[in-house]
Length: 420
Image (cartoon, rainbow, N blue to C red):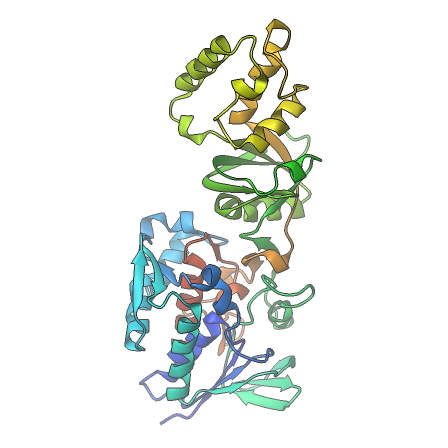
C-alpha cells in the first residue's frame, strides 16, 4: 500500500469536504490527511451561511441552466465538472454521514434549521476518519520539492505533504486585509490570479436622498447598466427581480446581490454603472395597463393633493423622495401647471435611475468574484503547472448566485480535489 500524506490549507466548506473525500478513498493512495487552519476553529463561515440556517445546495439545479447559476468559467467546462459531483451527490454524501435535510422550494437546509448541524456533521466525520486538524496554524511559504511533494513553512515548523490542496477561501466576510493568503500562494506557484472583487453584496449609490428611504422593503425590478464612459455601443444590462431593500447609502436585497458582481467588476475597470429601479414590477408585462391607470388617477385627482394622487401605489417614503425630486410637495394640489411634474413621478416609479459608486467592501460580501482561472486546473481540480497541487472553493474563479449555489461549488470542487 502506498502511504501518502495529503495537506489541506484552509478549513472552510471546500477544505472540509476535500478532507472527507481524501480520507474516504478506498484505493490505498492516502493514509493521512491534515487540515491547516489559521483561525481558532474550522468552518466558521459555514455557521453564518443562509442567515445561520445554511442553504447547502439547490435541487432546482439544471445542467442546461448552469451558465445562469455561475460566473467566471464557461458553462460547458462547468457542466463537465458538476457531472462528476452534483447536488444529488451532495445530498447522498451528507445522508451517508447521518445528516437529515429538508427542502423548501428546492432550497436544501439541514432539518434542524441550524448551520451548526452541517459543520458538526463534517467535523464528526473527520474525527471518525482520524483526520488531523491544526488550528491557529499560520503559513508563510509553500515550497515545491524537486522530485515530488510540497514543503509547507508554518509557525509550527515545516510540514511535508505528497499532495497539497489549497482551499484558503477569499476575503469575503473577513476583516479588512484578511483572506488574501491563498491568492498569494497561488501567484507564488506561478498561477494567474484574477483580482478578487466583492460579490453578493449591497451597492452604494450617489444621491443625498437615501436616508429618507432607509428601511423600506418592496417588490422591484432592477436593471443594472454597465458601460464605459463615452463609448457608444459598449453598454450592457442585467436584470433581476425580487424584494428590494433600501438603505441609507443605496440598494440591497437578493436581486441587488445577484447583480453586485457585475457592478464590482465594472467599477474596478473604472466603468460607469447605473441602476434603474421599477417600483411597480407587477406592470412589467402590461405597460398599457399602467398607462391607463395613470390617466385614471390623474383624471380622478385633479384639484386634490399629490398625497391623494399617489396614495397606495408604493411605500410613502418612496413617494416623498420622488415628489421632492420633481419639485412637488405632498399637500400641493394637482393642476395644469404641475401635471407634467406629476406625470414624471409616475414615470420615475417605473424607472428611477441612480448611479452606483461602489459595492460594499469584502467584509460585507458573501463571496468574491475572481481568483485562479479554471483553465489552469484539470477537471479533478489539479494544477496544470504543479502535479499533486489542487485547488478548491473560492480560490478558483467561480462564483454563483444566491440560493446554495456557492456552497455547492465548495462541495463539488472540494470533493473532486480530495478524490483527485
